[in-house]
Length: 242
Image (cartoon, rainbow, N blue to C red):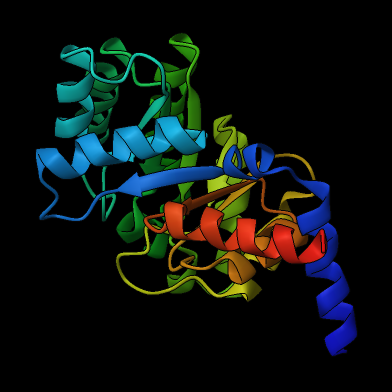
């Protein structure tokens, strides 16, 4: 079994160049005590390593875009973060402001309270409203379902809602409440069956877990440890090339 895992991870390492691997990662800076200096550092890291995008809070996303600080990288931001229970109108206004400033991708938190109450039509309407706004701007929309809080049957329903909303990705979690188990990544990939892409996020802090999620089928990784992960990937790449 150990050899199977070794060969699986090794195969993924061999498959991607460093640049290709970095393009699977959304470098994320959403900690509540992040400073402008932290943001500027993250912008430079995203530029240097070539991450797919930099995920910032709405206020910082608008700040860097309005100041022209991120012209050569893509900025992603969050809508309804972190709990998803803002009203649909509030989420729509938030998305509109972000996208009008040039945000290229938005991660939308599904209304978990309504979902847990069985109000699935309301949840779909809420998410679809924001997804439609994103598409009007030609932006990528991802729906965060907070999978660690959901039972298996709820995961099934949540993935279907993400698909029906027209979103490009279903995302495991915000990472605020708990770490996302790889088990959840597998379930979401299996449920998606190619109908929607999967973004794995929530506790991915090393290359091995990240590579495992990619091997399972995740097409994007969200992490606040992006630099550490690509450095570890580079080390693994070097070992494979000896």
